[in-house]
Image 1 (tube, rainbow, N blue to C red):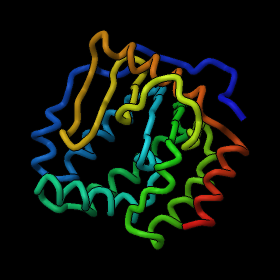
Image 2: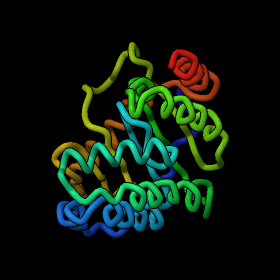
Image 3: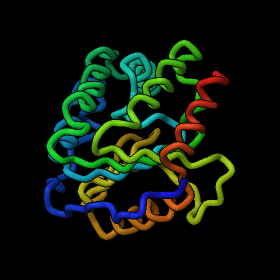
Image 4: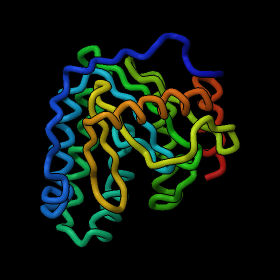
Length: 213
C-alpha cells in the first residue's frame, strides 16, 4: 500500500536551529552525544526521517542500540560508555513516541531489515519490535523495497526536525543543516516516500525478514 494520503504536518518554528558541537560531544563518548540528541527530539513536534540501512534510532531495542554504538565507539576510538548511550537512545522512544501530539514519519530501506547488526540473536527481537511498534500513535512507518523504483538518487540517511533543521550522520560524524539545503532534504523525503509501502505491505516485508533471519 502506498504512502498515506494526508499531508505531513510541518512546524518550522519549534526547534532551535543552533548546531551542537557534534565532534566535541562524540569525543566524550556515546552518552553525551545521545543525551544532546534526546534534547533535540524532546523539542521536536514533527519529524521526518530516512534510514536506508539501519533501524531508526527511536525504534531500536536496547541490545541493537548497544551493538550499533559499540561499532561507533570502535571506529572513532572514543570512550566506550555504551550502556549510557543505549539507555538514552531507548528512552527517546519511551518518553516521546506518541506523546504530546508528536508525529514521526519514518522511511526504512529494506536493507535496514537485513543489515546484520549483532547477528540473528540481535536482529530477531529487533524485527519483532518493529512489528509491534507499527501500532504506536503518531508513528507512520514506511519501508522502501530493495527493488522499488526510486524517484531520487540514493543518499545518506537523514532526519528533518520540524521542517527547519536536518541532521545527517555518517562516518564523518554528525552534520547539522539549517540553511536553504533543508528544502533539498524535504524534496528528497517527498520523493522517497512515493517508493515506500505502508501498513500491511510494510508489515509483510518486515515479517519476511524476520522469518529469514
